[in-house]
Length: 107
Image (tube, rainbow, N blue to C red; front, side, top):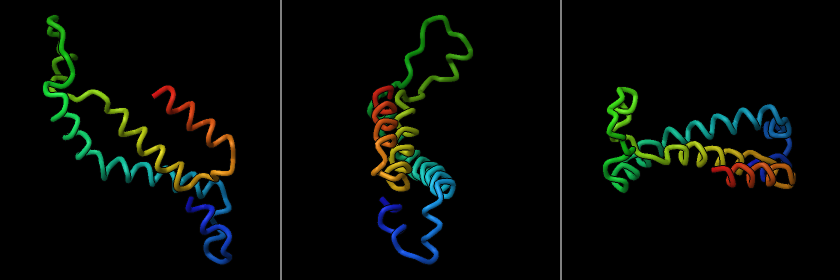
């Protein structure tokens, strides 16, 4: 969206025509969205799920370290990725939509 609004202007916004700049900006945006909303989303998931990750009775040390960890943590990564793509991607390109659809399908 930002690409479509600002790339038509000349001057400093001409850098938005370069896919390398937009991909780097999308990565930074996804990281910042993940960091900004990470704590709130983890607290929300922890409150909603109660005990968190179910632990089997085998009491393996690797599993005990996950006690209280909420599931669906990948949703946070997915959310950052979608925001970055929607802000910096060329939404007129059909490959963007196919990639987002496949990513959402596997999420």
